[in-house]
Image (cartoon, rainbow, N blue to C red; front, side, top):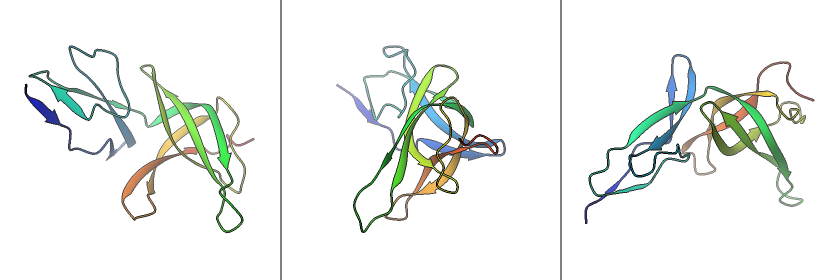
Length: 126
């Protein structure tokens, strides 16, 4: 059986802002984020950009220990019905209110690789 691996990143920077990439196939029609890593057979993968804005569904602040700074994690809802998980940027140490409008923003992983995070749109923090 044929097996194809996705190699493109799960986000893109465009003129309108940063977008996440969800995927679906005929055999898996519900949008999925992160995108499908592998596709079996000859199924065609449809990429669906989501963002750059969503609504904050929930968040938590992780306190990893006395020698490391706390960081936020969030789940953000996007049209058309995709909930995405990622880092939460807390401006001035304040987390945004639930249902705040969030923007996908560029971020970096600890190893320096590019990634995405969620930041509140100005005026949306609690």
